[in-house]
Image 1 (tube, rainbow, N blue to C red):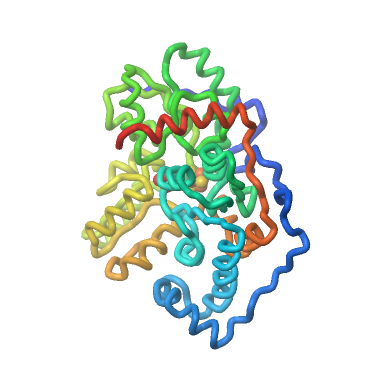
Image 2: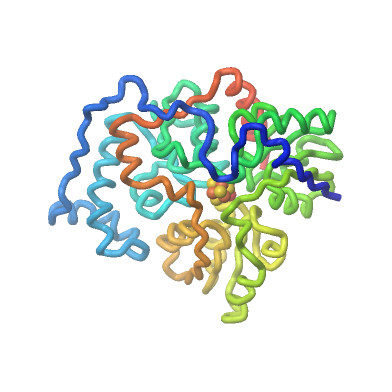
Length: 370
Ligand code: 13P
Ligand code: SF4
């Protein structure tokens, strides 16, 4: 049985609203940055076109010849600046193709990015993704400089619950372990027993050996996990503003047009969408499924940049794109990544005590075998 909690609006003490910005970090360039550094981009001339041709060959299917001259100089300069700054760029699967294929060093879902952040030897990590991901990188790499190109890159799930809400849940459900999806602030993670991602949520819940578990804040991920485990899941009412908009009816239209079309959904989608899908999994699992199964035609029921990123590597697969964009992910651009490296902005910081407690929850997740 699954219990839905309908408390978030009453309990949200900080006035935060889904999708409206983020907490944490000072939003300023780091000390030692070069505020006088100049944006000097080389022109896209014949020599640069030749130099950048091998990269363009990889993305030709998803970046037009008209777009490439505006991306290529930035890509070249970002890759040069990364070496100068001893920096790596970790990019979520929802980044646009010029970021994903052009400048990122590590790509993946939330779990893969958390693991990379924990092991990289670079001094600077630039998060091409949203704020909770940058905070997770900082929690796991407290001695490194973690930058996010736009501090406003939030998340409707992270904004749906506060640390105070979790303390109230703890009081209301004494002894019940609290699992939080990584799509939450560091302050929320610090109040929880363990974190999870969409790729390991079932394993994490079952690793606790409890009969009941609070799984916050995504009501749909909780409902999905409930279908995979006998542990009783108590859910929160948060939702991803991108995935909650998909409907089973719109997917049925694609099936009716071509019954051979495969439908692959993310577990942040509503239950009727998941029920009508051929496969459900994290963004990494979705990508792996397409690469392994090579469907003739597929719908990726998730943020729409991901289809372009996979399409660049699977030209034999036709992607149908019901295009729901994440406005937070889309705040990250080549321009602001370039500025982030040039001016070392904007640094993401986490209070030492919060980071210590949040690290325990994240590390405990990383240690769960999947
Ligand atoms: P995963 O990439 O971990 O599946 O998460 C999707 C997401 O919405 C991240 O914001
Ligand atoms: Fe948050 Fe959804 Fe955007 Fe992911 S896609 S960052 S869960 S709002």
